[in-house]
Image 1 (cartoon, rainbow, N blue to C red):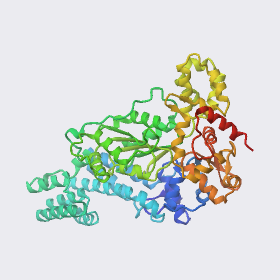
Image 2: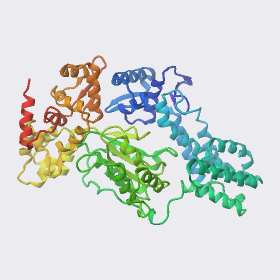
Image 3: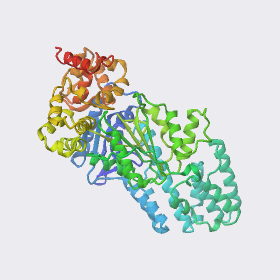
Image 4: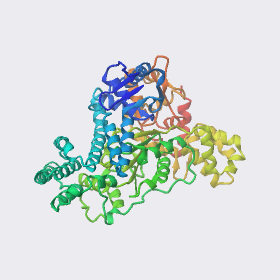
Length: 624
């Protein structure tokens, strides 16, 4: 089976096109292919299908599209439900995008080794995989989100192929092609530089000089900037008579990107928090993050963006920081880190975060004290351009906060953590964290409490693991309490955790607190969603469909489903399979359910401290 996205989205079996129609079905297929067997969240699929105006029946429609794809693709392809979305495994099938990226990478490597014949052959083969505008038969939302990066990758590959042709002395054969490309891409300085080189080597120096000045005027009019170093170097070589001996664009390709900044601002920042010494579990997720961040793990010219999602307390920050430390050798220009959430749980303003990141990148002498956000964004993107940086943005709250913090060039890699999918991170590898399995939970508890303390009380340790329900924060809290107090035996803590009415009170140690960690997600909810949160939790610990929630809330089913989806988006509710009619079911994590029951009818956290919260839990749990 063969999949194509470099043009209209297509499926071919035994050389014949598989017939299926509909822009939305093509969009779902393309989104799953682009994820490369990783999870595509429901929220991202929703944005790619309907933009910012989804219908009320989003979940049901997504389920229908996935069911239709499964039927069309057959047993050769597996589409799994993995909350908060879906993942597709294509087995031995091929994807034209993967073939393009593999050939483009091989061609670039051959170009660096100055094997120009081989480079030209591979790069031409890569470009031959294209069959028109990417996602031509999908929705405009998918095309807007994904087509620009693929078009950029094609343009970069085209530049590399032309560099190989110039190095082989084929300047006269490609002059006409380059003239058309400059007209198509007037702001691409490398293509203009390559045409200047071809013209000069063809004895047309005057045309090359005119081309430079025309490009300078276009850059000034369109962007308000002067030509970059590569175009200026080509012009200087033209004036001093050395351009006809200049080895094409090979030096620029060998450098890999724009020249790196020099001077004090080029000093490598090292802003990562300390690594977690006893990091445990998450082997598969760690491998996914590291592979996506590694330069060889991406296609040519594709930005490296990784998003780690999951509910509060699942260890998103620990995973991100551990992965960043593990991968820092790939980022010689340094690592930046910013916590996007303030100590009180509210989102930090992007301008404040930008100033912190700019300080990490070098002196702030040229940054005005009264600079507005737009000025800070421009400076930030200038200083990250062309640099092999790793940028970790922790606890992102939404698109408005995150958008200004993303570089606009592919060289810096960005690792983002957040409690739900963020459409701002277009094309990101999304790694969705789930609660730990019992075995990994036991390892984490032993790492925090001490292996001997846990090994001496296996039954109590198993009970603690069950009560913590796979939440790393809860396990670390209990382990810390056991380690800090020799008299606090695992058996005693297991007995105290056994009562669900007081369990949240026990999951507290110093600055670590499960109840407090969940508050920001609850506070970010719309008032109408907060109002139904405890009532939904009172439905019980089993999965329930929107119809059951509608009955409990005395609301229309469509309205109940909208409220449930809002809670799922806030990572306070999980989508857990479907019922016998194919309708999605929802499930509370056990500790989130206890948290919901500890709230006073959804209006505010229960006042009066832990004892009052415990009494309130008792009242809510025993109500009819």
